[in-house]
Length: 456
Image (cartoon, rainbow, N blue to C red; front, side, top):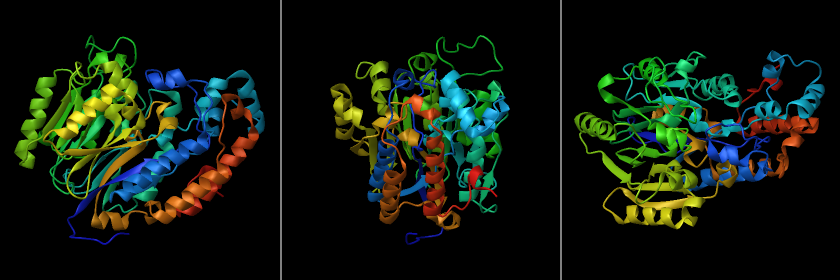
């Protein structure tokens, strides 16, 4: 671990998900236009993994703290047994490959690579009990994502295992009224990571209200009821919390999570002007509470439809960039490579870094294997603010170093296929390859037996 500074020093640590060995394009995410367009395409799990690792290595090289969030074991035979499939694992796979390839793709999905959906996290500086709180997302809106919470609970408790410092809540009830998609709809603003902040929750619908202007085409995945419950569980001060509603028009345009249309960090909010309902009121409340409790000005970087249409924002995933604080105090956008290739988007970025605001640089990363399934740089990471003491109490084997990066690259090249069709999911050999790969990974990361197939 790095040299520690003052006890109250805190850092934002990026816990990045990595593509699993069964990364495929099942086209399973209704409302996620990239995923829908890519359905049945041939994926490259090895390249997906290497792209994830390269992005992590870039952030670590910038002096930021970077950690690895391991993939889940797939396929999910527990769910298949619940659905009435029986017999040997080989027989189940062969039956599904012949009769229900979509269900097989769902149970083989590697969607857990998008760690921004794993949980919502509130650091100790914001909570009334002085502990960092985690609530795993229930992800009940989509079948393949609803499989993730049990392992998410297990891995979060394994990584953050000091009960005196970390509080782990169970996911919210499995009801559409409490549909929760995690940190993809949550942002924290603060003058410094160790200081008290303003927590910003964005939701798509109020499910206990009728006739409330919901989107007409695609589902609103995050409910107010879920966001409100998480804020309450995390013991947040209501006066330091802001709730905003997503514009239903942007949901229908493919903005399935708020992090596809806005991104914030520290004292900056970068967003498209169509992102929120009643935008003026939302922004006014954010600025007022930030000034009152953080004694600083919240800097708003707004992009209008005249400069970038909603369709261009969704296609390029500009707002799914990571907004990170550099060691020198400036801000940097970690943007998808697609933003560099779109002249309209590039003009917006050039204009932003030319202005008087904290964003002074943009770095582009190639995460195309993730982007084809609808996940950009920001989707791949769960942000956790940790103090020096909390860092010390966190499982050390997952923090990225040059040596760990090298080991993970070698591990991926050794175990991952470079081509995967949906039809290949019926191959029992893929199951054995995946388990062997994950078993090896737990040894690399020093996590012990975290997968069901490793249990005695």
